[in-house]
Length: 310
Image (tube, rainbow, N blue to C red; front, side):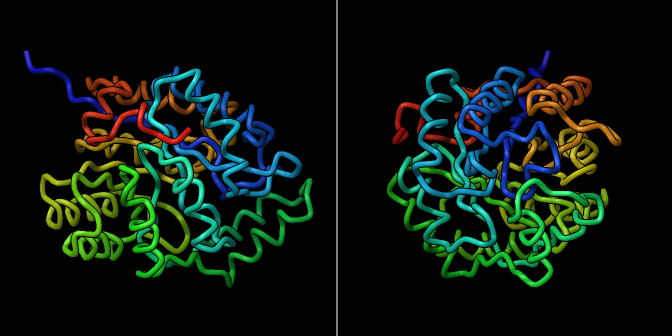
């Protein structure tokens, strides 16, 4: 009997999209982020994708000092693959954004493949009251603010981390981002196997329709053949439907409170582990198995958890 395919679950624990007022369950402090990551790993996530926040007001914080406390705790408590963001937040410079990955040399770091409009302002229609004075302007500012990831920015991140053995979760929010990856691959700036994370449902990027998911997959297949591993994330209410579609199509999945605060219609997720458990049920319901951290390391050709800088 053939062995079941292994599906890698990534969990994005807190992110920079949502603000503290949107959910009382959003991890803010280093302790909450560490607990959220370890809980997600125990529920079945092989990879945890990490941002940091200022514990005083929940503001996105890309200083290495903000990452250090929870990175060390996660490593002590879990064997999961740690993935550090270089996306940070659209308000940050590329130098700020890359600093934690350059400092801590993780097995995986995220990398956004293009400049885009990143519209968070529709969230203002649902969220009328805020705890902190930075939250409303942060969301409102996305009407005119672009998320800058130029060719120079992408190359700067790739070359800054080139000698660290870090592989990238290459985040593609639109079809053109796949062609940008092909450009850097053709130049030898980034090497296969590529871990392509297709992002659906962010205002400014590709939509969440099943045809959009198919279009991303077909294009990646044509551009990269067997040299890539595919994963998806659906923003907000699109999280589980897109995960289910991608898992059935041979892909891997990402969930977590960076991408969605919800576990069902009108129902806030109480933890990252709750979302991991739900997507695991979907995957196993399709007759597939989830990958362990060690299996994920083999599938993604990672350097190993003993070779990081934390």
